[in-house]
Amino acid sequence: MHPLPLDPESVKGFMPASEGAELYRAVSLAPPALPCLEIGSYCGKSTIYLGAACQRSGRVLFAVDHHAGSEEHQPGEGYFDPELASADGQGVDTFGAFRRTLRGAALEDTVVPIVAPSAAAARAWATPLGLLFIDGGHSRAAAQADYAGWVPKLAPGGILLIHDIFPNPADGGRPPYELWCQAQESGDFEVLGLFETLGMLRKRGASSAGA
Ligand SMILES: C[S@@+](CC[C@H](N)C(=O)[O-])C[C@H]1O[C@@H](n2cnc3c(N)ncnc32)[C@H](O)[C@@H]1O
Image (cartoon, rainbow, N blue to C red; front, side, top):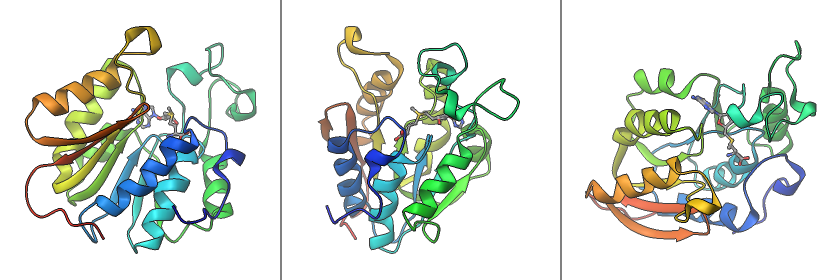
């Protein structure tokens, strides 16, 4: 991995450096020239890895997040961060922090934020994707909606990344693991590896030479 433009450890979030390095590498495995898309940016920690790799290879990264936080980020929940409380104090707003990350990492020419529920963005999306990273809502409904809405947008040879896969239920929630199983059972993907909790697959089909 080349040096990153901003230390991801200076940004709030949920992407360990070892998995971040795999995100960076995954971009080089994606079919050339096609855009990449992240669902679930939070304050931009994972975006730094994907965005820096996209910038190096001349790609665009779309970053989808409504920036209102997931269930576990809300006031009173386990992952609530008071520094990210919304102006009215009723919820969460991570968009300001996300924009500061993009500016600090000089990624504004590469990362295109889409501030919307991921299902709404998926409904109108028509461009084939070279890489899709799923790290949005972790409820079963949210995870399934992300899979149904976005996985069909992957181009043949495209890379699918799923975060927070815990094969042992004692270690974490089931929905991302269920997506991981679903992708394999579909027969549409070749498994490239499970790196800690980051699953990496390649959609079967045309040539998949990296950029
Ligand atoms: C686990 S966090 C993402 C962590 C981030 N990838 C990182 O590296 O720190 C999940 C994010 O998904 C977003 N999210 C949850 N459900 C969503 C939905 N239905 N549409 C858009 N964004 C959603 C939340 O706002 C939150 O920022």
